[in-house]
Amino acid sequence: MKMPKYSNINSALPNLNSVLKDAIQSETLHIREVDKVCTKFLKAAEIHPKLHRAEFVVYSPYIRKSDHPFEHFVFLDHQGQSLCHISGSEMELYGLLEPCTSLKQTEKLKGTSH
Image 1 (tube, rainbow, N blue to C red):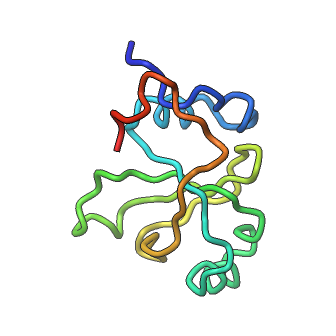
Image 2 (cartoon, rainbow, N blue to C red; image 1 turned 180 degrees about the vertical axis):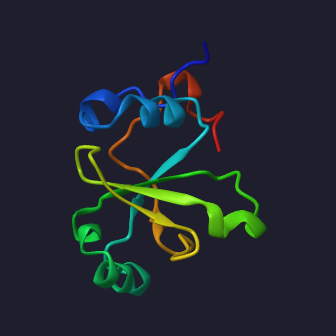
């Protein structure tokens, strides 16, 4: 098995379900923090009130732009609990993401990951 990407994912996000955790650890899906003060986020939170509690978003970095409307984003709270799913037809993540500072990359992967 490939080395997990994040060494502290279990303690940082204790409520993250195992399917998402495995997909993030294998880099099938990515996780980023949301910029909760950007205009795009604030407008989306008006439509989806659960987003006010969102700290993270899980998404696929491999979706082609033409398939973006069919993608679904999973928004998580500070402990990894899923709050809501929003489709790519409702919003774009561009300009909404920040690096995930609460997750620590496994030492051997530092410098080899993008």
